[in-house]
Length: 302
Ligand SMILES: Cc1cc2nc3c(=O)[nH]c(=O)nc-3n(C[C@H](O)[C@H](O)[C@H](O)COP(=O)(O)O)c2cc1C
Image (cartoon, rainbow, N blue to C red; front, side):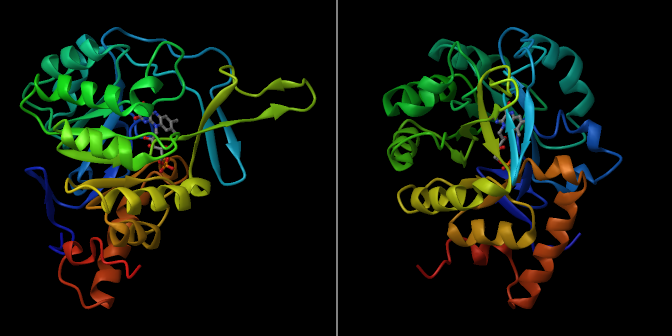
């Protein structure tokens, strides 16, 4: 493994700054036959809540011209099952970043406390999921609420706390600044953009939840713009994501100011895409005459 991509983030040692995005890569172990999990910076596992959730009824995913629309509804086995059955299986195979979601500020504190255990590398607070009716979105769209959730998690764990921002806001820099001031160690962005599709034969929305989150190639320019805006106003590192499908896409995010990237929807089309992105990114750095990915971060000549 070359040293070009080795880096660190909030005290985490990373073999590459390439993560897989929550909800698109299961608990990572499903991909062990396709890729070298240790070559990822880490796996942001599917969102975990205090109690198990069965998710939304009806159609949960539909393809769009350049990406997908999903409304899974945070289906997951709950934190107890995660800790007793899943974490022991995966903890030595990869850096485990646990994506958590709650219905109240206290939920985030409780989840952070329960997950402050060996094998969890960091927490990622999902304050931005647009697909549940009983909470989530309010935390990501109100800077005071976002700060409260950040504080609740920070004061309950010794792990790095990554706060994942929603793009469904007027000014993402306000939320980013509030989370940084409240103690976030890192910000990740973006979550999905709210969207909708209607079946013109039935006149019904395609998704059981009516609306869903748009991800994939279509959202890349929006995500890149937001990473650049946020990088200009915070000092904490940023994990950029949204529509990354190639090393060229990833390079744009580093240039915009991201210290690491996460790959989401692209994993569905090509399960080993993260490894190809790592290889191609190394080639790109060599061609640029650079010795480390760190030399690329924030270097956009804007
Ligand atoms: C099917 C699906 C499920 C997702 N589930 C979660 C989740 O549980 N928690 C979360 O924070 N983000 C979730 N996301 C959002 C992704 O982690 C990512 O932020 C978003 O899809 C943008 O990246 P991409 O365009 O590379 O997919 C999900 C996305 C998809 C497509």
